Image (cartoon, rainbow, N blue to C red; front, side):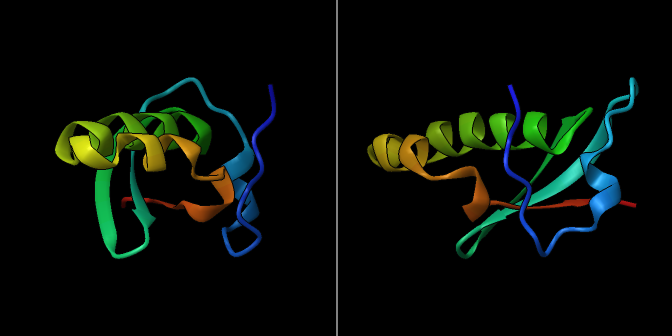
Length: 75
């Protein structure tokens, strides 16, 4: 399965590596730091965490397109 990458993200993020690293994932005014091997994994984990933090908004969070998430590596 392929995931769309935000065109504003650096292209090197789309490359997959075997090691887990931290990503900063932003959607709207909310930012969270999550582990993952790829930006797609980081978006998946961010969705899970946001649904736990905002249970009344879980349906909206799940319906968001991946392009709405801005994923950046944490250095």
